[in-house]
Image 1: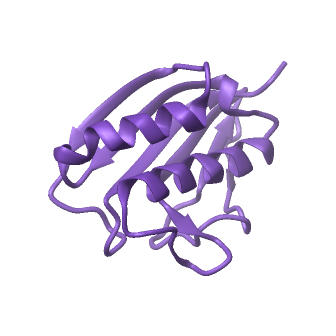
Image 2: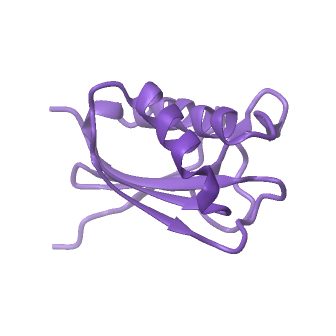
Amino acid sequence: MTQKVDTIISPDVMTPIGPYSHIARANGLIMISAIAGVDPATGELAGDDIVSQTTQIIKSFQVMLASVNSDLAHIMHITVFLTDMENFKAMNDAYAAAMGDHCPARSAVAVNAVPKPGALVTMNLTAVEKD
């Protein structure tokens, strides 16, 4: 039996900058595409620093997860893509503040660039739906 995959483009976060959906969901598993720290009200980066961008990404994750019966506590794994590993500590501090006590598995990698001009970080995640 083939499981249907639902794809969702959330109107409450940054518009995708390519041919992809924000969310893919099947059988209780949720995948969220990498996003930058873009303020959905303005369409611009939430700031030019790693702290404001990281904080905005987590806020966007909260919005998207809520739309598919999930939340930050149901995240299994996050991948962090940093354009400069020198920003790791500041990103980590902002990430910890936004995530609270939940510490899902995580990877952090340095990349040459990300698709959103000016973005210092993007993140994607895997989560599950709430019971």
